[in-house]
Image (cartoon, rainbow, N blue to C red; front, side):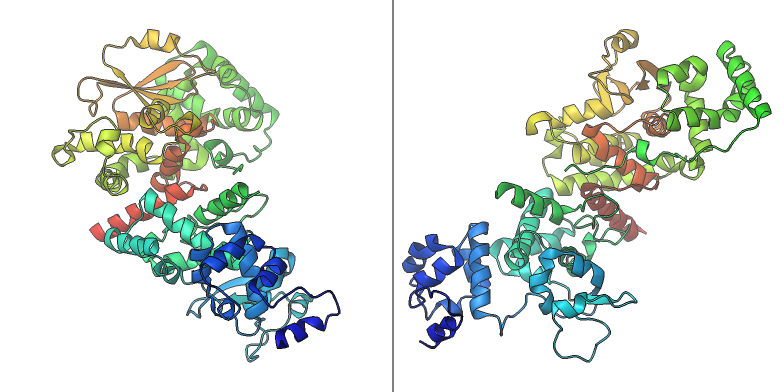
Length: 535
């Protein structure tokens, strides 16, 4: 009766709160009445519920959110026990960001404390926090305990066991872990949690499981990267939230060699310099030797070509008319070096031998059936030569990082990805006929052609295919090196099917700047940990 009297003070029509039905109707979840009656949940039990019990009782996320929202307001206003815990390390967030995030308003008083009042026992209201008070202040956000969240369910405890045993996450376990953690976010903060709440959860993941930490950036970028400069937020947590929001009623700008190529304005040239470039260009159109003079003139006109390709967007076919030797392997390598990438030029050849074994190990950890899936069920990697391991590791990049087959079909995914990266063809293939059969509109270039016999790990010949031309290289690894550099030199976007493969080479091997996707960050963290253990 006291509860009814308190509710009557507002003067508005009073629903019947003498039964469970009254509360459920008030919270907009009357459909739960039968479920509550089945489980004998009455007015005496209702305030005693906890959020874990509610999660198990109400599996539908939308209905559960409505119930929890009303239940918290009714019974936990004064004694709400937050799911956040005190930690030694805190994340910082601008007060301005809190003020500008509409979804934060209802819960700011439980987790935000202005740093100017460290001795205050209670937290000020949102209106006082949001009052503009220069200089800009920071607030401290307590870290969410990812391990504690996982320990509340059987599936979560299984994930913890897997993590502690293997020191990494397979895709299956990662998806389960992400679903559990995002479910916790939604239950406590709604479908659109604030940036600092997602960041706090991501920080907790690498704090509780440090072997998942990415050696680059914040360490938790694979789980959550805050949006900035018209670039949306990314990471496993953000992607799961978007999926849940979509199912309850991206396009991510991805890095590529095109966006990362140098696009600085070329310095103004004098009339004499322009005439010199025109003269050298004319000479190169008519002559292919002596070699040293060709190389010298190509070097001196590199800046002009870069301007044509990167700024004026002149098609490669037109560039070929002015510089017929531009597709020589030596010229591509030289232009890459001259394009401010000389420090990265040799990194693939230097590092790949050391990385190969760890990439093969990573494939075994991520999918024990990898040999069958790449069509080599009887392969014994322990007896392979160094060259065979090197080539196998390259093939596995397409397996580990390649996209799905069109339409989401998984059958034949590896073969489709390999065609976009390294197209394996029989050694008897007529290369001239192969080139004539290429339809540029259906077969984006560049990519690699490798001619193989019965041992697919030892190609007899390797070619870079670009502009329906074949550039032969002495080894498969050097062909991959040339293919990567051609993306930069000719300002070509990575093929979507193998974009993560090229991103991996760009960010992890060549160590060039780029925005690696979470799947690449996970692999980088594993490899870096293996290398540090080996050292």
